[in-house]
Image (cartoon, rainbow, N blue to C red):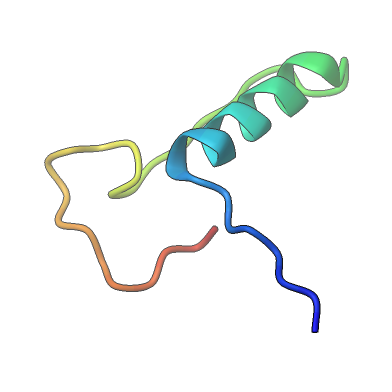
Length: 48
């Protein structure tokens, strides 16, 4: 069996932001939901 370490919340955010900054085709990055808005109650399942 191969075990893969799950990324932390910060690692996921860093990956997304770094990817967007490095790809010249991406002109903007917008995120919404409980991951980035503390006023929204977190769900048990998150999209990424």
